Structure formats: structure tokens, C-alpha cells
Length: 121
Image (cartoon, rainbow, N blue to C red; front, side):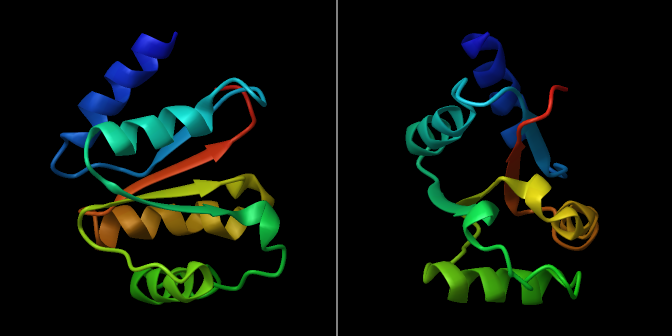
């Protein structure tokens, strides 16, 4: 299973116009570890945010990609660049954040955006 997931990430990361990727699975099966190891092995800066820790987050309210990224940078105090892998954990806690994914693809497909939730695919 691990090799299959790693292979899928390899294919996804090389797409020129990649859609944000949602990784689904049961709790405690290694989804976050998979993303962290992938970022490290490929030399990406990992920008990781767990939305469960920010119950009142408003970054996604505007659906404006530039504003979302700027608000997330301020919240986490880390810069996002084109070499950044953005990992949003517990995205299901904020349904508006899932809606915002469409705009990342439409407006700025160069960003590498991964999300994780705990529902079966």
C-alpha cells in the first residue's frame, strides 16, 4: 500500500497542471508521514497546517488564492514559495477550505497542495 501511495504522489507531482490532492484514509495509518517523507525526499519546503488547531480560521472565507496564502503565511509564520509543498491536515473541519481547492487549481496550479482527511476514498 505504501509503495502504491508513493508512486501516485510521484506521478501527481510531475503534472504541469495538477489539481490539489486529497489523501483519504483511516486515522493513524501514515498519511501525514507519507507527505512529510515525500517532501523531504524531493527537497520541498513543507508548509503544514492542521485546521483542527485553528477552529476559528478565516483564511478561506474570501476564496481568493493570494489572500488565503498570505493569511496562512501569517498564521504559521512561514513563507510559501514555488518550492513549497502545502499540506493542510484535517481539512474536513472547514468545508469552505475544501471549496477553495477549486480556486487553487483554476487560479494558481503551480502550487503543490495536499490535503488530508479521515474518510475512506
